[in-house]
Length: 582
Image (tube, rainbow, N blue to C red; front, top):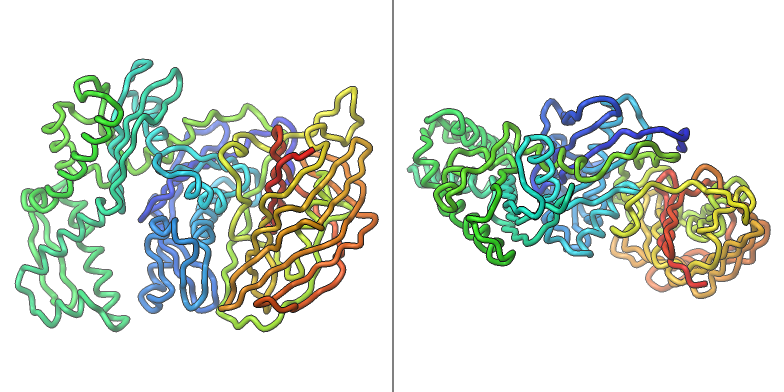
């Protein structure tokens, strides 16, 4: 909801990792602090769909996965290119799984700060090598207005702004980020008060999990009872799956202990034995993995045209980088003693907030999205008609637009699992407040004036009482005039589509709508006064429902910058991307 002018929001920096997600929250006037999830700063990035259709995250997901492995995805970030995943017999958009994790973080932040539903500024990090399509998936899952920051840039800010490392202007450093699931090497260059990524290289199969796998492979050769070990390697019952998970948990705990001690024991379930492991033995097991990371560092240095002797520093980030063998290996390879910190897993999350200047004050802050609602495993038979829009009391001038886009015949529910899709160029600042000028009366934002064409609409609808995300809708035209009237033309609208329970659904509207609008507190308030628009819903190409569009008041938040306009429901029910055409 809107906030008073001059309010500085809570800030949340999120490092969404392959295996674990870490977040840091900053309340104005206080020092940054890590969020805790079930007592730990590490939130497992795993997701699992429970029997009721809810998307569970973190340790809850790990717990339910033992009984429902078909509903479990341990590393959703690695599936970023796959579009949808089949979990528990239903298709889930990858961005929806991302959103479940991010919303868990924001929920914990709201609880910690005592601002449930209050304004937050969100910064999320991503690999420097991720291109536009992958970034779009992440942004689609994040709250509107989220800013993306490259992970190596965030880490560099942490080491220089917080850890006290020195890099001169124009100087370069290597970010060595060894996480649980992946390894990333990057060369960053200091540019005044900021950093730029010069070159980056990622290894998707070279992280803490791969080190754990090397230890498990070592145990497999220890001569345990073949039948018992086979049950650990290929479990078929819930008890055996839990034993396998316990084995991997024990291996990880032993690996972490060997960062502080020279020897330890690993309990092997089912076999019921204690296997000894020493640090020197561990160093030999992980040497091939660390050698690959060194090769990746050499590659990014060559790509960046930087000699190792010219580097200002090598910074170690990621929880797995605290292993003593990491610093030793890098020192031997490059002749530079790496810079380490006590909690390298927090470096990227905390540095993300340092890389984005905190606002002195904002006039409007966007509330975080409501909880994720999963698609329940129900058969799609018919669609309940519920026209939704935002006429009379809609706040923000996008009434006619939002009307067209929020009126999907199957629209319903209050929550959203995915935030509006945005692009890096349109998420750099909070929603602007309308600024009256001598030329325009109060309630008119000059940036909105003109005709806009929708390039992407996302809206949730109901199919058998299950919320399903529809996307598309390009071609709808929305016009805002200086006299406070609005006009929406659906006649060139492309269908919004979704895939649900082995059926293809599409929705399209035809006709026009006109009304009045005004802008207040960063929202568009619109009242539709006349319309002949009709919506038609099809299932597998056949008409399932059709009828006139009706419009219900709902304020619409917006971000207007040049020839780009982004509008979205405060409740996360819909979002629109538009470009100016006249």
